[in-house]
Amino acid sequence: MTGMHLAQLNIARMLAPLDSPQMADFVDALESVNALADAAPGFIWRLKDDGPGALSIRPFGDDMLVNLSLWQDAESLINFVYKQEEHAKALRKRREWFEFPNDAKVVCWAVPEGQIPTLEEAEEKLMQLRENGSGPEAFSLTAARDFFRS
Image: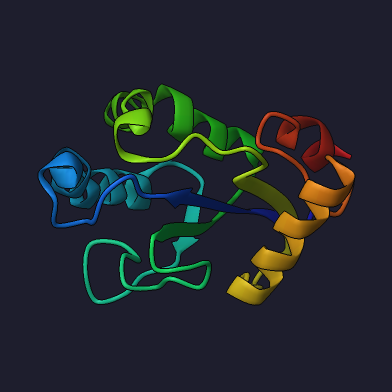
C-alpha cells in the first residue's frame, strides 16, 4: 500500500506478576528484544514508557501487557516476529508467561504514513477483528500480507 504503514497491537494476560520468578526470563529478555525491534529493517515506532518497553502502560487491565508498534510493511513485521532469532525464542516460551487467549490478541491495520497509532484506535481495531474477523479495516498478523497489499 503506497503511502501506508502497518500498525500492530498485541496484548497478553500475565500468568504471574512481573516481579515473580515465573516472569523473570521474560523481563530479562525484554530490553534486548525491544532493542532488536528498534533496529529491525522496516521498524518505525513503538509505544514506550520510561523502562525497556511499555510495562507500566496497562489500558486493558493490571494483568495485561500491551505492545503497540508501527512498521514499514507486513513483511518487515513478520520477518521480525518469526525470523529474528531472539524474538522467535521468546515467542516459543510465551505459554510459560502468558495465558492462552480465547479470542484475538493481535491485530494489524494500515495507517497513513506519518501517523502514529493510538491506544484508543488500537482497542477499536482489536474489537473489530474480534467481532468481524479479518477485513480491510482490521486483520490478523497471518492475514497482514494479503490485506496490506490490497
